[in-house]
Length: 376
Image (cartoon, rainbow, N blue to C red; front, top):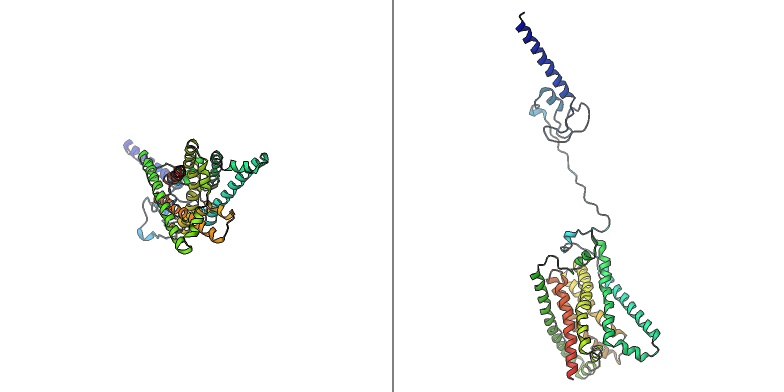
């Protein structure tokens, strides 16, 4: 045998050995994924078939090709996707705070009970403050004069901040990030999502509806007075409406400076606090549980009763006089409250407009009463 033949023989033997080594190494490798269906393979030594599509893995490794199609048998297994399980209240993310119309939020009892609890708390605070003053004042007449002093009334208006504090503390349980800002946003008191022109628009709408509110109250007052005159007679209406009210007593003690301060407090404190708890909390909760119409009506009803609760503690000469005087005050309150409730719904549950409407309406009312009283 020549040298060339020997070299060719040795070269061929080396190629065969190298190929056998490659084959043996490949056979030892564990494949991570099935080459047919792509399913992840379990870490089992000498795995023969794919557990999902039943492809012959061993055949592919040995023959370096896919098995005939008739050897592949695909088995479909039902897919089960476990539903989400929530423990407690589902938290609202920071990006979803301004879009909660599809969320149920708090229930009916909470929507009604929390404002009532806030009112009781505020009443206790005011009563405690008056009791402290009475402890240091032996003259009952002086204490009564102090209660109708405009500056004392301005100071006592700050107790209505309870109407902001209570719902703000409560709604934190619904938020992923319960910061003070996020709590106010959930209640609707925010400018998020509004450009400067948008905020100006909301303010102008609020001012316009404050003026419309004056018209609504005047018309509803005339309407209910005419109805009551037809039912009960003119004399009892004149006697009832001719009595001195708390508003007249307050206005009689106002001067220009106290009037300006009082108007500012009505816009910044009274309008803001009452709208946060009655519209931002109560109406928002009732609407999600009872629908728009009943949510607005019930909120307006309770808002009106809150402002007239003093009627039930004032002695009257006759039940008829009490009913007439109550209706003369209730219908105008209920009318403007319905208007503000609808306005809150129309402005996509943002409080900017309704706070302006409520506060400016109160300021206009007290200013007009001051002017009329000065002319009498």
